[in-house]
Length: 226
Image (cartoon, rainbow, N blue to C red; front, side, top):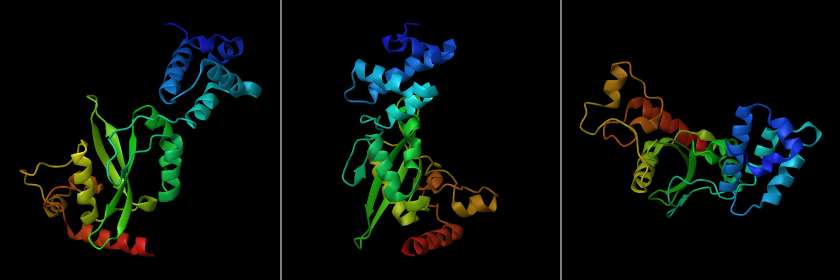
């Protein structure tokens, strides 16, 4: 393993410890360079040495460095009313506005384990719903929609969810769910004791509606109006 020159300072080497942590620190520096549009070696050394003062750790340096990231990986291209956070500040802003935990997912987003996309749906009456779609990656570089939530992680009504999923699908996202040609229906799944807790699981299926969904959606709308 070739040691990154940034790690050669004595006080930095002293806290890297085991070979595994040295390898992790090496990889961390590569990640930080990838997530910053402009960062010099001098800036990296200075930031790491400052983080290690007074008993600081590599983890402290990692957190501070990623909190200034301005070039995060993106899962989908931007489009009309589709906003993909590209910086740590974007994620923080999304979390603040929708009152969700988007900002706490920064490390996962930086590492390519997760992506969060802001989607604004405009209903026929002009009402706008601002939503957060969470996507997870596949090994071949594609992205699967794993959830869509409204403000405060509220459930999204199906008449809003379906067009949102279709828009994400048009941008290349994979939508999970039973085949249109299958025997699936929400009522049959309920009868067989199969409870799909995530509306994404069958969000695009024509037989996905059930009485329970209608009740939950009515409650979601009532909460949003409150």
